[in-house]
Length: 313
Image (cartoon, rainbow, N blue to C red; front, side):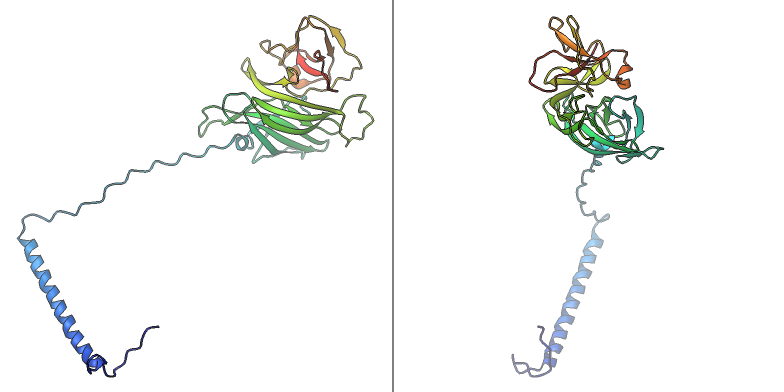
């Protein structure tokens, strides 16, 4: 706490505080006079020098900071504002759906929205890709499709960040197939799904899952300037949606070579020298546009209940 000043006797010599203030005033006046004298002498010295006084050195200039690089949107962020090719059940003729902030509403009131995504490298180019789950809610029910969006190498601000693989790799549909999970693996994605098998599961309630549990691995490969999903396990086959045949029995054949995708340059997935069973499949307008035949087949012996795979001829 600050002390209060008084006018009583000064304990340092019997002088009063008023006398101390007077002495202090004399000292302060003398100091000011001395300072003014010094300033006058300094002005005389400056006036006697030739030229103008040199300016004081300035501080070194700081290097100009380069503008921060704009942050590029992720593959998922890009896809959430892009136009998609959408096939209602993963096999129907596609329609264009434009997303804004991950959501799209059509004229009939149907809503399609991005639900979540799994990041990975589906085509082994070292650039991040995404398997994106989108859900469509309409009068006919709810459908979920998993589409792969590939990151574009060397993308820069103002350019496309990703491109869609137009063939979905998994689906969940009413009274039908159920996708349990999609996870990233080396070289693609692993899909665990529960399929509804014709005849075997016909008596189940619509809400009940089927009996055809299947685990398969899918990569994305390029043939003739387009991207296609290719199944790499449990056996090589088509990597998109593979519907179940409604036939009780297939057709035994030999000498038939089926492909992993529609283009003629796609790799073979069957051995022409080994017996093969083929199955007719439901119409798939999304896949028929290529002109290639789309079959179900079984060749390799497995312990899985789901033996039928899909391929092209």
